[in-house]
Image 1 (cartoon, rainbow, N blue to C red):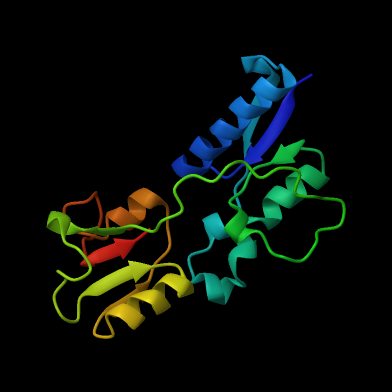
Image 2 (tube, rainbow, N blue to C red):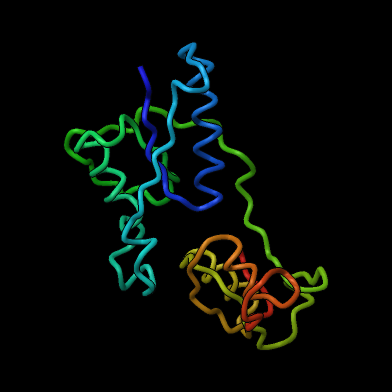
Length: 172
């Protein structure tokens, strides 16, 4: 019997799902070939608007839910912060693995800290909570709504990856 585990295709999602697959193998006594990762492309991956304009974080979950309900996957793994709080008929949150380090991180060129950023610095985040925290601490900042995987976001900061380098920092 093969357990098909649905996941988004980003490097972060695949890494997290790989950890869950390893735990599933260990708990259920399954072999390497008994757990298959199934990549599911979501509306959140395809569409480019802000999360608020797309209807919130649920845009990343709908396709994974559908994949389980229509039998393409047996289970799905997704970040708990993006799962809508409303129940989904026919589905349940079956497990929540131990949480890794929950802290946010400011990624800026030359190892700058939040205090070191120049007045009016442009800081990217995709989280309204993080934006509010940034502005509460540094009201002078220009907070920019960003999307994308970790590599794409880091590329928005000069010297931290391939990308436009149009921001002074990003918060992940």
